[in-house]
Image 1 (cartoon, rainbow, N blue to C red):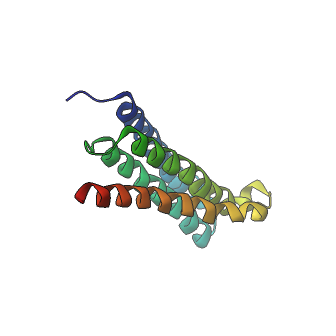
Image 2: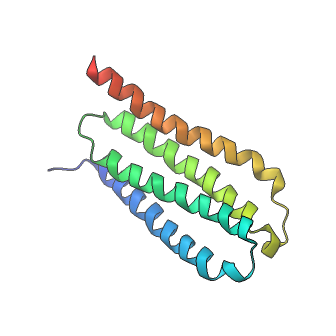
Length: 133
């Protein structure tokens, strides 16, 4: 099967997100365990989970033959920026006790990231519906 450049970019992005999710998950479970409360660790873990879910979503996306390059590119961008905003802000908010930086003002970024992730799934849903017509 000949993969397009976009498919390769999506798979590479998935690999990077998945790899960093595992690294951050291990870091949270081992290194941060001494410094964060159970609630902060749970919050940090939520960021890791959503990052990994979307890494797997990108692997799936890169294997879909029926989506246009434009649709894949749109979904890819929504996922990458969504994960950066959603999981990234969660990582910062969860670790404020060790950084001593009040990241509360960036808390608005978390739901924006969530909306971008929802948007990615919505674009996939829309294109799947259009294909079935």
